[in-house]
Figure 1 (cartoon, rainbow, N blue to C red):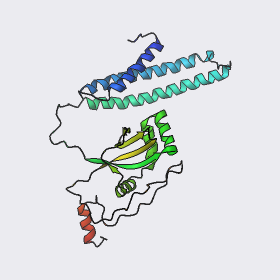
Figure 2: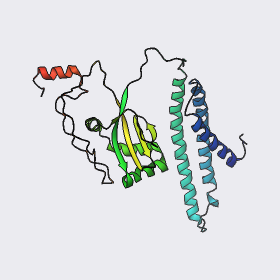
Figure 3: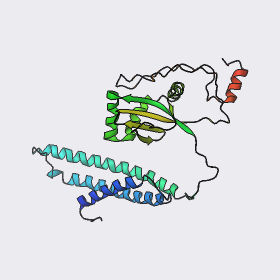
Figure 4: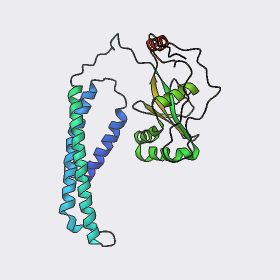
Length: 274
């Protein structure tokens, strides 16, 4: 329970409560419960902004008492004021986040959750294409980012290897397409948007995959005459620590299997087909 007078104890309890919420909010048996959680978080963010402002104010007012361990008063004052500035900047960012959360809270209030999904609702069929695979020393940096900053930052780092359609084409041609990410033993899978980060601590590799929607069978035609690759090839070179260079993916002969049939008909009628 909060003490309302012991800042140290209340901060520790708030930290533990958020850790528990992070664990508990992985699933919701009753989706309607999320509305109340968002409301409580909104209230908590207002309080967090107030705490940050108050901490900044105390750092400024008590700067005359600030010293370094070696007794350097000037350095202590400098760090106290720097701390206050960063705290106020954090408070402003929390204020912006609160505005966005408030919009989400309003939108969530308009949702009426039904126990059963709509009959016409159908999940979009998709598979996963490989973006990059790193192992050994090459995996050290993304694994370090994962450990220090979390999986979202690790995904952002590895996403530099994603060249959109070029990456998709290379994965399709070389067979680096999977029904689910992390099909290996001891694979750990972390999702961020349309990306899946797969880590295997036992083998020491990390890979990034991207969700790829399956073509609509009513509009797509598979070109069975298209030649196939004799075997897999490396998508990129990982020998450099810098961002990878774009690779030139050879154009596939004939029409790609996901080119709409209507486009093929137009190409052939104009004599553009191969």
